[in-house]
Each structure stands twice: as structure tokens, then as C-alpha cells.
Amino acid sequence: MTGAFQGSLLDDPGEAGPRPLDVRRTHLAHGAWIDVHPGWIAGADALFERLLHTVPWHAESRRMYDRTVDVPRLLAFYDEGDALPDPVLDEAKRALDARYAPELGEPFRTAGLCLYRDGRDSVAWHGDTIGRGRTHDTMIAIVSVGAPRSLLLRPRTGGPTHRNDLGHGDLIVMGGSCQRTWEHAIPKSARALGPRISIQFRPRGVR
Image 1 (tube, rainbow, N blue to C red):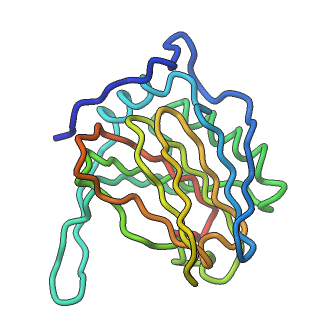
Image 2 (cartoon, rainbow, N blue to C red):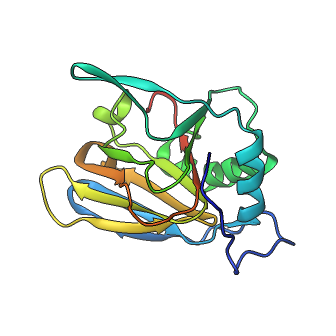
Image 3 (tube, rainbow, N blue to C red):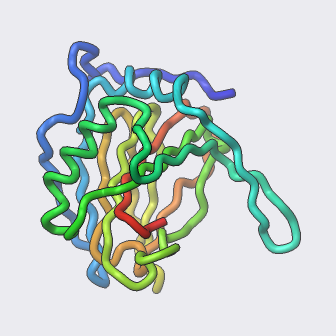
């Protein structure tokens, strides 16, 4: 069960798909950086509704210390060669590859989707360091649709936390050393928040 979703007044239902990329790069410490493009996906509210009802969402549980706990969000994963669940995501991947493959040295290969149903769903502080992200610079591109949620970033060695409120078609790309020298999180919230879906495009061997 998800909370009530309130669409953006700025979203034009007559448009659909990614707009021309016009990112703002912020250089962080230790060789990390982020690019942000607010409202990159036009028709983001309609895309959210389609993904909410057509993606085969599933719950997962994980072993934490001496007990098994439910992952506080729903998940879906599309590996290399899998058909993405909506044509807009194909368009988004093509646009991201055109912009970032020359810098990254390869295209994005997989797409992971997370459904945050309300403020109780979250993801703890972490870096995507399973695979090459532990030792090599890489990129992860995240498209957010639905109600905005705060994505926080902080350096692993300590320092100020950066906050980006992402939803309604916003794009953030984390690059450079970001996955191994910084952590990111979506914290829980006691406020009444609507549902959000994040779509994470990753290169091969990065989880």
C-alpha cells in the first residue's frame, strides 16, 4: 500500500520523455562530483503512475547481524538485455549514454528501481561498492518520479552533509570517486509523504 500521490503543478501532461540535458555539476571533496538537472523528465507524473502499476515490484529481506529484516522499500531490477518497463526509460538511457559514455568510457547497462511507499520507507547510509565501485571511479544516474524525497550525501571521512530533494522527473548523477569516498541515504520521515520511484542506471559490474 502506498501513500497518496500529489502531482506537480509544473508537469505538462502534453509532454513526455527526457528534455535536453542541462546539468549543473558540483565538485565535492576527494574527487567526487554530482550533476543535477531538476525536472529532466517531462510527463514525470504519468510515468510514475505507469511504473507504479506495471512494474513487478517485490519485497526483499536481508540478514542484519543476528536477525532477518525486511528491506524498507519495494524493488525491481532490469539486467543487461532485459526490456525496460516503459519507453520513456529507454529514451532516458539513450540520452544518458550520449552525454556520459564518452566520460565514463562505457554505456549504462542495468536499471534498478525502488518504490518508496511513504515516509517510513528509506535506504540507510551506503555507497554502491559491490563490484568495481569499491576500487574505481564510476557513475550512477538516478531519475526520480513521484513525490520528492531528500537524498543526502556525506563524505566517509566526515564533513558537511549535502541534501538534494528529488522527485517529479529530477535527475542526479553521482560520479568520480563518489561511491567509495562518499555515502548517500534516503532517510525516514515522520511527515506524511507521498510515494516516490527512483530509477538507477548503472554501468556493468556496479551495484
